[in-house]
Length: 303
Ligand SMILES: Nc1ncnc2c1ncn2[C@@H]1O[C@H](COP(=O)(O)OP(=O)(O)OP(=O)(O)O)[C@@H](O)[C@H]1O
Image 1 (cartoon, rainbow, N blue to C red):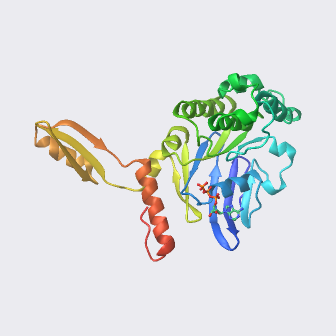
Image 2 (cartoon, rainbow, N blue to C red; image 1 turned 135 degrees about the vertical axis):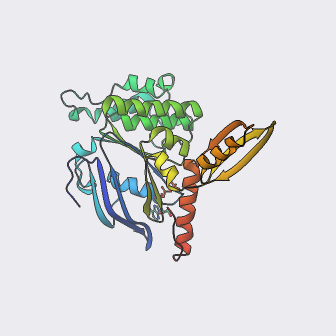
């Protein structure tokens, strides 16, 4: 692998099998400074495995991985202090009170403060940002699932990380909490320059939050680009919708501009609308092709 001074995360040829069953079959991905990257893929695609390897929580079978310039298998405490992690929810520390536990976890970051970089983050301010001020003195065991998830996000942020890795951070959050989370992510990216790598099943979330989408299927990254670029990657038909004399009409076409031009030349068109393929369309199409290919290796994948 090329030595890299700048990439926050660089993964090349990553392979992982569980009990002889290959899950990651040569994953290549980069996350650059300033980026928010969403890792998408169907259940069991290997997203958690990938992020756990990047976090240094899991040993890989093969491949090169560099995170903030260090191989995660050899990361020391100073390296770990630069990375915030939000795992799929964990359920320990039930008897601790919310603020007490967050303050305790925050203390571990104190030795890693630098000039111009206050570590840890102010605990009360962070509790307010994730909407847990009113619950600050409750025991962890009494939190709802969504409150617990907010707490998990606070744990990921408390060390003011250079790199924040989140595994399905908004699973179980209500729409308001989800939106607040998106705003919080934008804020830490803008104010602190935090690089973010997150897994999600929520395509609307990926479109809202991420600069770039990586789609993992069949053990590899099969799409990589902005949400709009990934949506365009599968050149599905667009839908042209219009009305004539109050009657709704719909036509699917790969040439919406040409079709619309002809339609308008015919006159009397009202409520004209062109609906392009969405990220969800692209996601479903790409995953379908890769799943078909894993059972029919002779099939060509159109991308
Ligand atoms: N410790 C383990 N031992 C054996 N198999 C495992 C282990 N961890 C994960 N797997 C298997 O590896 C595959 C990938 O799992 P992983 O959790 O990485 O996928 P994922 O993309 O995060 O899935 P989901 O979207 O359902 O969370 C799955 O088939 C899973 O059953």
